[in-house]
Length: 189
Image (cartoon, rainbow, N blue to C red; front, side, top):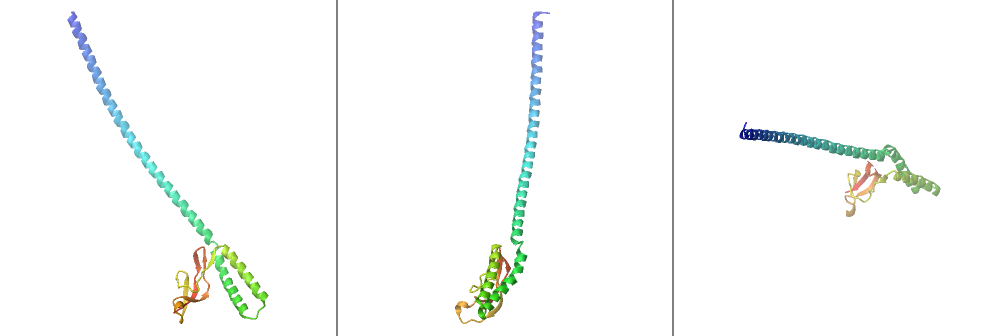
């Protein structure tokens, strides 16, 4: 073999080696592109899963917050109206005390009887007011069907008493801003 042949053979080997390296580089680039595409797809899937889990968490937290508020509201309503039946039972007693006071003041009863009845009435009212009971102020006001029940109409001469409440037949009461008994009233016409 001549020197030229050897050089040619070496050049061919170098070219083949370079071509093989080039092919390997191209294959490596293709592999890297494929790996990168696979990683990007996996990353997108993970992002979608994170967004889905995050959305579920936010919805669950909001649902729990609504549940907590609703149960707290129900508990407050239950506590505020738990004594409603008992207080409603006391209302006829209050009516009787008011009537007894009126009768005692109009008759020749002793001052001790009047003061004793007033003391009992005041103690009962103080206790019930402490539990949230309030008297509906009606006399001289306009009829409001949210608080009053008109049981009669009575003709009046004075213009300022027309369409106003001129007498309260039965006192009305509210418990914690809820009407538990409407005031029965007479309206001037």
